[in-house]
Image (cartoon, rainbow, N blue to C red; front, side, top):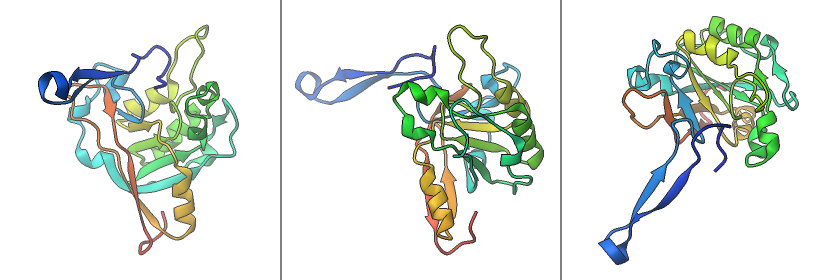
Length: 211
């Protein structure tokens, strides 16, 4: 499974088998930032809230969709793309379409939030921000200085981040059809963690008001 450069590789193997032990049990080794996951603010600073200190309602809510598919490889998403006001409890989803490149080198050349866009999201009242790419920040190469300026802005404002969503374009299609969209991004309950993998689920309701 592809991981962010430098993160632990994923290993899944048999720990117990029916033939030898009477049951099947898998051994799973992975980093907390593997696959579709959420970041707690603690991800970038020991003094910031850890995963188990964040209320569960931060991981579910109506979706506010940002169509950022016009941005090309390694392009900076500016403040003009983000909403000026976000209702309390809503989750902002930046839809780049980049999940189509999952498993290829192109996936790490995703569009990313510039610092002005990150500040605009904080000012809008956003408290949870999700993206269908490897990171809200630009993924740096091995010869470049490591930096997470959008993470710094969002996490220090207490914003929860979700990354590596997939198929988010379908949410745009549902909105266009007049559906409201509710997201569920619940993480594994890991005490003191910087983040955790999630099973991201969206529910589209044709009876509501479009998000």
